[in-house]
Image (cartoon, rainbow, N blue to C red; front, side, top):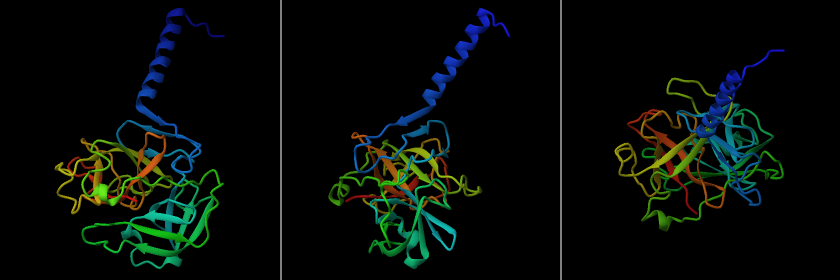
Length: 276
């Protein structure tokens, strides 16, 4: 048996305490309201405060789905009901509905606890493939998902409408938001197998990292971090940008749309605003 002197023991306890404090400071845990019908997964979300994204824990973002065509990953999306997925228009515009498979209930982009074929694609009638204005679409599934599956749930839609967005930036600038997706990890990186998550802030439309990139702030918003290093990238398109509400639910505030480069300090990421 190894005998530890009191000085060594005190030093060991201090190291353990320091590591616990540091770990607590570097992570944020979001415990959601499990009694509600939307915006809450089986497991609470735990996100790092340090630079860059990270792999998400299983059953944390259980409304997030992957869209595939002929076993080729296409984009991300979010469940807003058992039969409907919301995604970016540029992901599905011109595609044939029956060729798109939606995988739900897994952090892997290739599999899910459930999969469904798409029966209908509804692209916003004013979507522009040049400016990415109104970059939003709905997908109807051929058969509803089983929402009793603990790995599948739906995200909440915001209570704001287009009238509010016509006069106000919502969410307000500097709001903490979370984006998830299976996009490449850097501009020259590869696609991850597992779902990634990143904490960002909404950026004012007047900020120089945002204003040159958007065409219509009423339907587009910017998010990122001032120093760069955190962003969505190619392959994250269609995935959710989410805010944790005062009622302890995750609310869909945007869809990953486009951007200039990835995680560059000079450019924010561009998202499509979501309203009801």
